[in-house]
Structures are given as C-alpha cells and as structure tokens.
Image 1: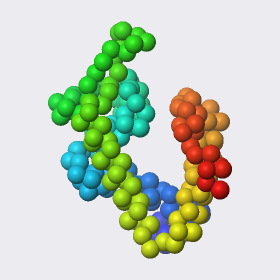
Image 2: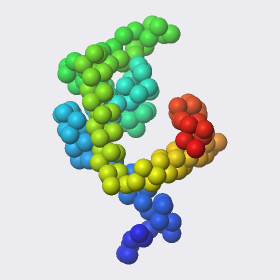
Image 3: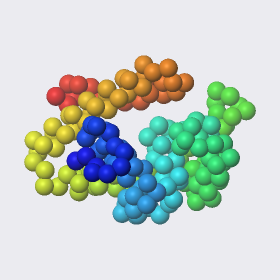
Length: 177
C-alpha cells in the first residue's frame, strides 16, 4: 500500500516498515501497550527497564547509548527508576570507578509484565491468521531481521559491534525453517 501523496519509498516493504517503526516507537503506543500489561511508566522508563531486562546490567553510558539519549537524560531516567524501586546501582566488578544498573526484583516483575504485554499484542494483531501464515510471517521476519543485523555488522558504523552481539541472540535458521 503505497501512500498516494507526499514523498515515499518505491518499496511497499520499506513504506510498511517505516510506518510500523514509527507506530511501535511512539510514546503513546509504547505507553498504551505497557498500560495493557499493568505497567504505568513513561516511554523512556519502559525502554530502559525492557533493555536491562533483555540485556542484563548496564553501565549508565551503555544505557544512554541504547536509549539514544545523553548522559544527563539517562541520569534522570535512572533516578526516577531508582525512586520507583525498579532499579539499583552496584559497583562494576570490572572497574570500581563505574557502576552497573540492575533491575530489582520489582523491576524484573515489571520487565516480565512488559514482555507479556508485547506477546499479547502480537497475538492480538495476528488473531485470525492461519497457523501457516503465522509461521511463514515469523520465519520471514526472523530472516529479514537476520539480514538487517548482518548488514549493520558489516557497516562502518562505530556501533557495529553491538549489532554483532545482537545477532548472536537471533534464532538459527533451523529453528525457523
């Protein structure tokens, strides 16, 4: 479905992915999905808790990079999450001058609620699809994700190493063929 006015990509795939990314990363959408999961946090807090839940303890600088924000803003996000009892800081065992941000047990519960809300959203969006269509979509989406990650790891971007790390978490081809 190509837009009928204004600038757009020639590829319907790129147009659809752009719309999906815009929707799925908007504050209203992220907050609504979280609320559906019983979590009442703002988008930056949701993304921070989700990121730490998925990737484990993080230095504030790494969290800032993952959230695509600066040190000052991530400090405010961390402070809000500490006050809410969702995260705590510990000294980094590799560098006593640095700290790592960990989820508390309550933070882990919130991360789990967010994961369930995401799974429920996917189930809802795919309701009415045949099992075969769902399996095909999953297989092709994972294949596309793998190709995107491979492209990112081969790029000259300074954060290509992060993409290489993310690629190691992708299911293997045999798991989805």
